Amino acid sequence: MIEESDIKKIIRELLASQLFCVLTTNLAQSHFPYSSLVASLNSDDLKHIHFATSRKTTKFTNLLSDPKVCMFFDNRSNELEDVTKAVTATVLGKVEELDKETNKEILRRFIEKYPQLKDFVEKQSTAFLRIIVDEYIVVHNFHKTLRLTLSDN
Image (tube, rainbow, N blue to C red; front, side):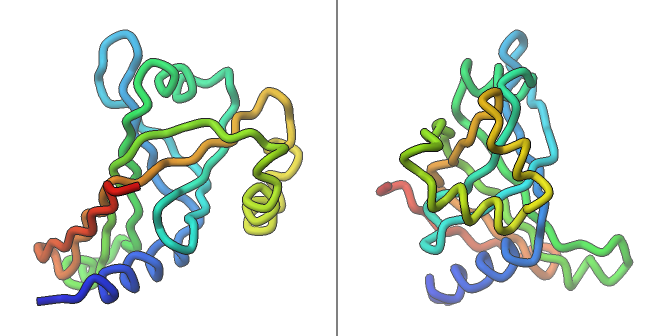
């Protein structure tokens, strides 16, 4: 059986290798899934994933209505070898907005990773958010599934 430390290593490597991921929220009106591409930064302990969005977006409206989200990371290359080589991670959790003033270090790290987003992130109209991760579901070698539960946050 694979050790928790090995699962965390796989997750860390995947998240570090990807600049963008897919965030899925629930549409406020119909509760259908709604997906968006976002830039993200995970905490070292994997308990949180941070991202930014304008308060004027559909995703932000959805998050106000229902903070439960799914975030999807993958390292596929769109080649046939992906069947055996690609790794995916589905992240389940709840979102909360962070105060930019009291979370300056995380905000600094986010801007360091995405310098082209500095002006956007620092706008008053931009919300800086974090997912409190409940669980990671990792799939590798096409069908092998690993789970890492962090619901004791």
